[in-house]
Image (cartoon, rainbow, N blue to C red; front, side, top):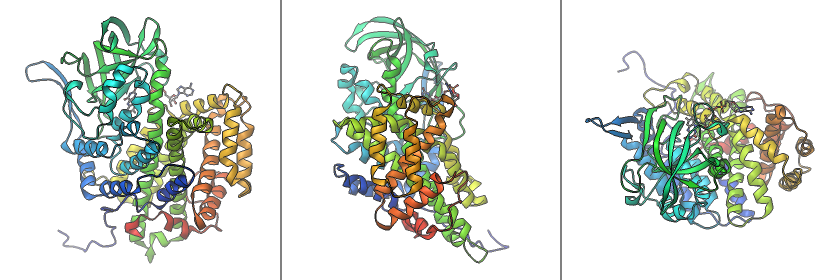
Length: 562
Ligand SMILES: Cc1cc2nc3c(=O)[nH]c(=O)nc-3n(C[C@H](O)[C@H](O)[C@H](O)COP(=O)(O)OP(=O)(O)OC[C@H]3O[C@@H](n4cnc5c(N)ncnc54)[C@H](O)[C@@H]3O)c2cc1C
């Protein structure tokens, strides 16, 4: 009851908006990519996904899945181990939606363009709820690694692409749809997985080949209710990759003890466990002693999803900021009309668009290289994986803080899970940490720059990507030249972040130039180059006065608020 006052000048909820049709930069990017020889994408499917993911029903599921967090049951009433995590029904509803839209293994069973289609839908789903996308992403990413074990791939490939989610905790043989996870990180080392101590000893052969018994632990083991995992363990020939199911083929529970669930900053809907393996049954995937490259065939694709996920979260935070400031009045006009706020919003819009095009370009490189693409696309895939993961995820937290500030105090308040901006802010850092933290990504880029032919392939690829925008802005030309000069094998490790930042910005500028149509091409590109390449952009809202802030803001406006 408000007996003392009337509630006014508070923004409405941003709900029941179509996340796809209301996202002009994303639509422009997809249209631009389609124009450059991408197979036609199913835009009607993206429109349907955008409507569903932006619905009130999905927002309710996301709130419930984040407030009623997973519960671990280690034993049953009679003392038997069950090692089962129980989720709120909304978690399962979200998983069901993600699988129905083919965000898991579906692209591996489809033709050219499917990875890009999935990437766009994955970004849109992130705006609904990113937590469930952890197992969904791992189930997408596992296929290239699993191919090294033809019998397992033949048995599981179709189940990893099946679109009807099956939440039952039963053996693989009885399920039509599967999800998979990965276990690398141990207490003594996550980045340096060579320090893994989990041991694997041979235990005979069966239909899946050489069987092993695994003994040891994993310190981070997300989505433990996945049906199976790829994990690293030390066997006689060195660190190797193993397939570890939750249930043994004979229908008994595998010896994976879930010790506890992590109490995390964000990512609350998703369970992240600590586990021990007590002579758990596992089957080797790939060559003995080659476990790291083997599992990184999976890790490279979850890195793509980190970039897509952070770009999706940025878009969500931006939409909330634009929607709020369009409705909230201060000092006689809507906040969005205040010149300095307009500069902040326009700058956030630039960052969001740049993240979107960079993440999508990586998805295109994945798609093309999976479908017999040329050497250029393979080099771009190698180059863009660390660059996009590093830069987009790194920018995410600063972005979320600034978008939150646009909402003032309301941005900071949770109120029973309704405070979506607070949830985004807590979620943002995880994409930067897991699957290779920032430094690890920057060092990986350095390795690509020192490639087998001294980086000549990288130089050619960068030249080709930058060619269209050459001469369009002096700062772009200078920055592109500076990046190319570093392909000399002498950049020091301590400078690897600087290099990753410079490569990311040059590629983002080149992509914006190529993919943004009409008047947007010059306005967005010019503003991006002036603010990111000609000067350091340490806080948002520093766009030089000559730019058309109105246009940049209007371009980013979610449809419902326009
Ligand atoms: C919510 C969550 C879920 C996770 N789920 C999983 C999962 O399902 N499976 C799994 O295997 N792992 C998982 N992880 C673990 C994650 O991948 C690791 O935390 C991450 O790889 C970093 O490893 P670490 O924590 O051991 O940190 P460390 O390896 O100790 O690294 C600490 C810091 O040092 C930096 N660093 C390391 N080496 C160097 C170097 N040579 N030069 C410069 N800097 C360096 C890193 O960049 C990092 O910033 C999860 C993590 C989180 C937060």
